[in-house]
Every structure is written in C-alpha cells, then in structure tokens.
Image (cartoon, rainbow, N blue to C red):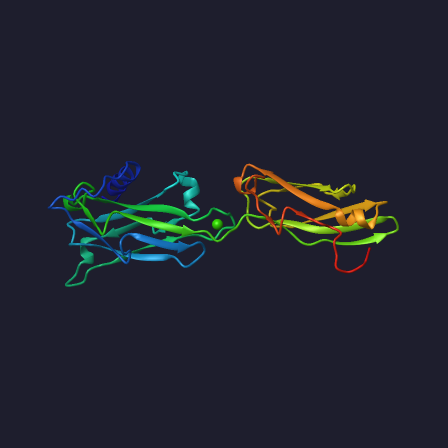
Length: 274
Ligand SMILES: [Ca+2]
C-alpha cells in the first residue's frame, strides 16, 4: 500500500495541485503556527517549524508532502538550495489516534546559508495529500488556514568588488605600490575586474585584469603597480579606475558596486612621503 501511496503522491506532486476544492465530506489538514500563511526566514537562521495534523482520524494512511515554487519562476534545481522542506513527507496512520490523543507532526522550512547575493526572495510551499481514504484524497480534502504558505527568504549577502587602500614607496625614479581586490559575495558566473589609470601618469598594474571564479572568489588578489619618471604633482592627480564584466548581473559593470568606490587616488597620502 505504501508503494501505491507513493505513486499517487508522486503523481499529485507532478500535477499542478488543485486549489482548495473542499467537499463537505472531505477531511481537513490543519497547519498550526503559520498565522495567515505568510512567514519570513533569514538565510542561515534557525529553521521555521510548523505543525500539521488531521481534523479527524483517517481510515487508512495519509501522506502529506510539499512542493516548493518560487515567485520568480526559477528552476527547481536552484530552489532546492534556497528553501528546503524537511522531512519530504509526513505519514499519519490510523493507529496514531488513541484515546483523546491527536497526533501532530512537523515540517521544517530551512533557508540554508550561502554566499550568493540574491536579494529577498518569495517562495510558495504547497501541500499535497495522498491516501486510499476517500476523505483525504486531494479532491476532497481541505487545508486550514490554506494550502499555500508564502515564505519570504531574506538574503544576507551583498555583491560588491571591495578594495583596500594602497601603500606605496619611491625607489629612485620609480614609485611602487600595492593594494588588494576581493569580492564580497560568491558570483554565479566568473567575474573579470579590469584595472587602468587616468590622469596623465602611466601606471602599470600586475595583474591588470583579475578573474574571480566560483572556486576562488573568496581569495583577495594583491595588485602591484608602478609609475616612473614623474612629478609629485602628476602622481597626486593620478587615479586607478576599476571596471567589471560578468554574466552575473550583480557583477556586471552597469550594476556592480565598488567599495569604497570604483576609482581612487593611489598616491594620495596625508604624510609627505613622496
Ligand atoms: Ca545568499
């Protein structure tokens, strides 16, 4: 029988679940602790738990499962990493009802910690039931307060290219300096950061293009630069300029945030060291 229920449940999960088609004779699936059906979870925080019970003792096993969809319509593969429901199925058996005892079971909504900037996302958790008991078939059952729970997942990541301030020293006619560049969040595609200078001083950079991938995005890269045969005045007028390119829109030039800013004066200092 379990196998038959599993097949039914799978079939119901694959189909778009009908709304709340509550027939008068149908059973009730109650969700407790979900208020009006809207909850909010911060990414990486403790799971949100709610209890499920049935309005009456069933005649046979009742399976309750969930289906997660996103308001943005992204693929299920992506959703699985953003909102997880555990366990995958709750099973209520008639023998769980003894005396006045009303069995309750819990679903946990988990928003796992990650390092990707996604902004706040809205998900829908829908419930489906499968049972050989007529009262608890998907066609007759009613959900209280409703079949669908809206789950807002608050993201705690911010996409940005961040850099340290530069240090430098002059050696004869040469001025050598360095600073570091890193990403604040994991990109969904490789990111190229291009470095150039303006202000009439020829500054060379090593490297002049930095590539960050999903594997090593968290390691800041040291950038060395040098200028030569130039005056203090022109050095002070020089700027280092950053631009970026990526298929991840957070890191593409049009939307990319640079911290503290996309350009800075590498030879500016309060101390008279030049
Ligand atoms: Ca995130």
